[in-house]
Image (cartoon, rainbow, N blue to C red; front, top):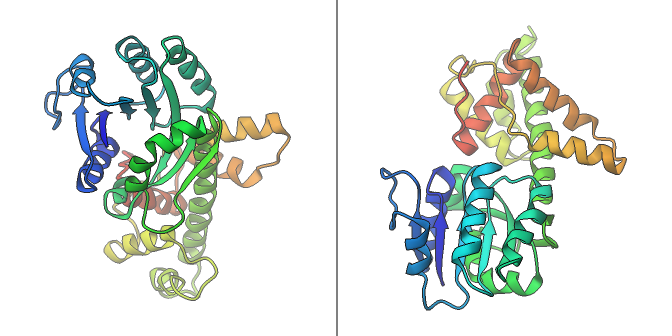
Length: 293
């Protein structure tokens, strides 16, 4: 397929590369002249897709105003039947508004939650889509290239908003898992009984019921820095766990683990410890997130 990619940062740029490596043609646009963009405006990007039916544009820009402004501009540039994909970390409640803005011009909308961080370019991305089933099938070749090999890693979660809702819950779970590993590391470190906390954690990577990619990443960090002293005891929160807690409260679903991990990150801004060093190490490993003390 031929696709336009708006936003060539850490995620968008890597996704564009994976798509090209998979045989697709990508026309990339980014506001920064220093980016490896192919065109220098939205108008030029849409023109470069002329002849495609439908034209497909993937938006990978920061959530909120930047995404809303980009979608509003695309609504006036694209034609009836074209498809816009929002692959950023937009709040699921924003998707209905995006779909409405585009629908007024006959343009279709699909929201896709994307997970995989900086490793996605080689390992593939977990993709959670929301939108019309026919639109999902139209863009499936793109999604199949971006996803990992195998039968999992891609789902049509429901209608518009479902993709970002699923990604929001995914990130809430991620918060709880990282917090648990961080608390385990902190407890091992505080004990006089344990001689080598890093070796203990590494031993859990095989045969253990808690083996996971996050544990692999934490173990790799500990091999380079056994006490994680190079990582600040501070962990930022992206907002999605907060959105999940809000949604859970509205739905009457108790989510104490997610709440606790969210509060721990907020507390870390003023009083961190080894727990947050571990969380920060994992975030740096899987997503390239750099937290400043």
